Picture: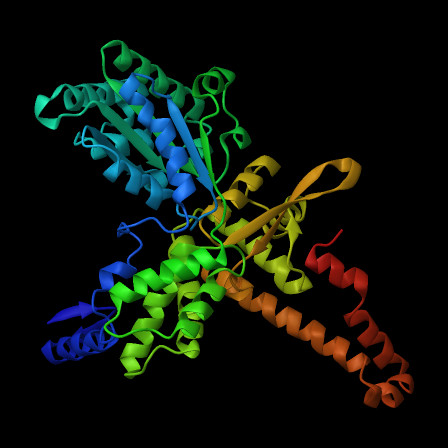
Length: 458
């Protein structure tokens, strides 16, 4: 026997669980095609972006290599998939390493992830970043000089590059500068390489030293969100290969619609279709719209729980601040300053608050996690400002971050709404106006100043 969540599980239980999982997979012929980590056999809706990237990389044949290519755009816009596809299929004398920096929290952690991907051991932070750069250089020299590899050109792909730039104490600009200098040194030895940095925002949005900006140039590939038609085409291609029988076209269209409400997100669309297939299979049914709806709810819950359960205290506070103001005011879009004021409003007195700039960075991090979306709007003579909106229910955020606090907030809101509805109900007019104390008590309970103070509105 084994123990799981405090419950004993025997062989019969395992057989039952196995049978349930098999039911979920009844509709699938080859489920791997609904795995976002699976590279597609062809590019759909991103042919032009693939060509732009190839133009930057193919120069190695003439000995001309750009030091860094910035690939940026919203999550789910195909950045990582297209970069991998190009690196895998461009030429036989090209090799690459794909490093996802999301697992790191510091610059030194990023350096260690690069070392691991290159087949090297991690270093201790006490050894310093220079030792890490030396180790990375040595590993690349070894790979490029190995005749068996037949490698003329090496591409170092750094996915989730934004993570590197959040560690201010780790001096990210200095680390990027050292990587670029390493490239130059390798080139002098006759070894060609390029860094492809994948991020959600353009490099100019980040605080990077001028010495770095001058070296990286303007080699950029911007991935705009997928169109709804492109998302639908991707779903049709994946569904044909993944399911044992065809999925109705109106179901695929509905799935594409649901994943494109904010912006065309192919990753979310594929996850939705896979999860809907599991839900329908468990019930022994064909995929219907209600299964897509159920998949939306399940994925929202899973996404919030996965991303925020291990998040830092202040990141949870920022998420809770946006959830709080959205829930209490029923307004959707909120400025950075509004979220910052909410953050200051709910933080405990014994906790030192972060700066306004850091809160803006954490909002960007929430957007990178897929929990928040943003847009920039004009503020007239005050310039431009960024507005943020949750893409998951406020309740889901509150219950994961601070469940007891959220429960108290909900009760306070219900009490206020009940008082407001009572005073506005015509049936209560005679009672109210015959009893001055009742009038005063009810008006005080919904007093704008009192409520605004609780909400945290200026």
